[in-house]
Length: 272
Image 1 (tube, rainbow, N blue to C red):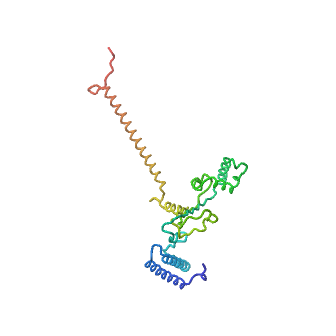
Image 2: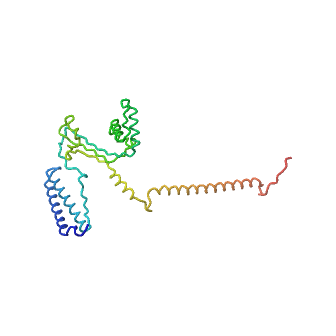
Image 3: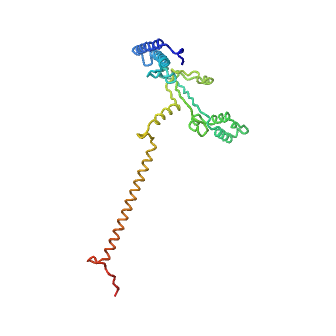
């Protein structure tokens, strides 16, 4: 950023004052809260988050410094629940993303579906990825595809599941034209997200863990193998020494058998 575009010191200080004011308002709203989901607390929270984020940006632009606060994004949390305490109906909203990793595998699966379908004789929808996807999702339930996605040449992406509360069940066919248009975040009872982002963060933490010598856990097996080899060598050496000792004993015993009681060699005598 150029010097002309940088915020002034006065602007940074004004942003800091705005954070202080937002802090006071948030604390006052918390002290006066009327329940767990008080909208006044929710609004004060959002105002504090916005003020802190603005101050953080100006502080960085002017002084190349940051604050120790992490401002949660809109996608990281849901607004307070305002739906019925005892819902009479609910909707389950599911989105799963896939990448077509192996088009040939996908179309091969579609050809198998066509071959097993007598009514589809002469219709070769499996010749294109678009047609193959239509055959695949027309034949299998979405949950089965999720569990067998690799078999169908697909690669999993992010997925999310929202359970929303309703006052009453919708009439048949009422929402089919726009199934997700009426989703109200404030009526979400629970939400479950799956993303590779979480796996990457977890893996990064594991990769940072190393042994005292700077190597990974894979070196442990090498050390164990060396110890075993040394142990085997020691055993072989001890065994050779034992065998040598036994041989010496056998020799001594044989020599003792060929001597008389005075220790002199016994002369062989011919049978008479």
